[in-house]
Image 1 (tube, helix red, strand yellow):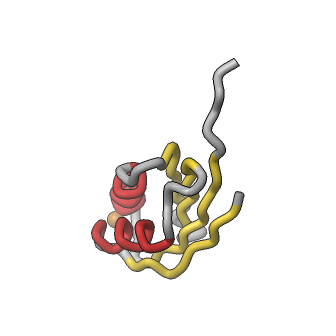
Image 2 (tube, protein in one colour):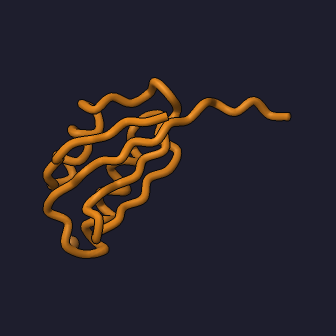
Length: 80
Ligand SMILES: [Cu+2]
């Protein structure tokens, strides 16, 4: 059995996304963060779900990634 790192999920609220190109840009930015295993964006919900290795991500890092991609960071809910 392979030991798997414990992961957690963050739900990031993002403003300014209008089309699949926007969401693709956000996904790319989030996946570039260290420890992020998966990122998916819902345009309808204006939210990104980020799966990451526990302890590897801070709200500040998520905010920075979203902002640098050109979108508005509106908050994040971290959960295990
Ligand atoms: Cu767009």
